[in-house]
Amino acid sequence: MSFPLFTRHGVELEYMIVDRATLAVRPWSDRVLIDVASGAPVSDIERGDITWSNELTAHVIELKTTDPVADLDGVSASFAREVRELNARLAPHGCRLLPTAMHPLMRPDEARLWTHDNNDIYAAFDRIFDCRGHGWSNLQSVHLNLPFGGDAEFGRLHAAIRLVLPLLPALAASSPIQEGRLTGRPDNRLAHYRVNSAKLPALCGRVIPEPVYSQSDYKRVIFDPIRAQLAPHDPEGLLLAEFSNSRGAIARFDRGSIEIRLLDIQECPAADLAIVKTLVALLKELVAETHLDLAAQQAVPVEPLARLFDACVDRADAAIIDDSVVLDAFGCADLVAPTAHAVWRRVIARLDPLSDAPVAEHLAQQAYLDHGTLARRIVAALPAEPTPADLQALYLRLADGLEANVPFVP
Image (cartoon, rainbow, N blue to C red; front, side, top):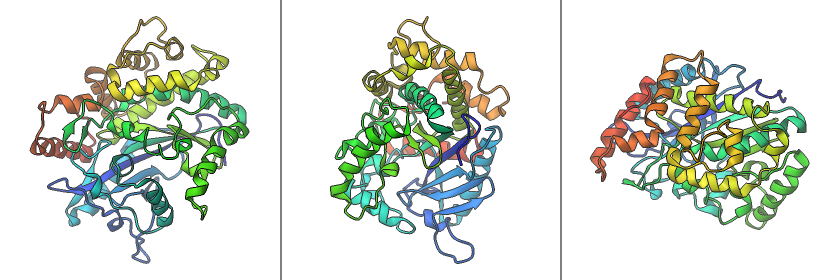
């Protein structure tokens, strides 16, 4: 069943399972994803408004809204409740959940795939791409699903989302560390994401989706090339184009929604929902053609958006936004070559997306306004060349903050 624009919201949060004391990776999601009746591991456990789910790797677990919600108020509290419950169930195994989009010390050879329900699909991906790479096995994100009713609404929503995608790393980057090293890039998760499936380039393209605004065009331009490239590598036909599409936003015509995938997960659910609400408010403004009409939105090609995306992956909130069409779309036409942080500050001030939000969400928004992305705050809390002990101390603090649903300020 499809819903009209902005009448429902589906939110998914991913967390890594780690040793409670050392933060070592623990592939033990099947120790909490247990069917009560059979005692066997399962892919999903519904717990009222939030469902627990497995992911590709056994050390990642996903929390998601069981059904799309009409109102985002209260969602962060529901996620925070389930984080506490998961931590309580992991504690007897000496484990806990870790926030942020990449484990700071994990090596690719530590990856373990989920081996229970649907493992044949995961094994197929592993055979083609080798899922031990960071971009497959060391990445935790937030997915936002937004509905549309028919081609006309799809075309409006897809156009708006394409314009916003490039600047999402400047709002949500939280992965500045890889294998114990500050890389100088604030969003290493997305740096890997953009080359994950380079072996079959049709799957991801340039991350920014092509300018297509109907189901038939989407099939022709995006799905058909994916099917063609998958076919020689997937003789059993396990990998469907609809689920193998790895762009930064993917159309799900089977359920009438678009899934946005470029948000790094933050330090706590309150921070994630503060970002989600900001994104929804901006997309509503774009769909309403407040600053840029639909024809102009739909005319923007991939290349300038991909260039901005790459800049924001590499520099996050410090990236310079010099594209006049994007600045128009964000209501920032009067800003001359501003930083992405300045653009988001303008958007947040104008739209006031947290007018009725809980205190923790306001604190998370203020942390961004005052200090920038979580990646920037993590770097500020560390020495220039952090030791494993430095990283362990900081990420234990972040894990404590996740449990308490408290935004992080260095």
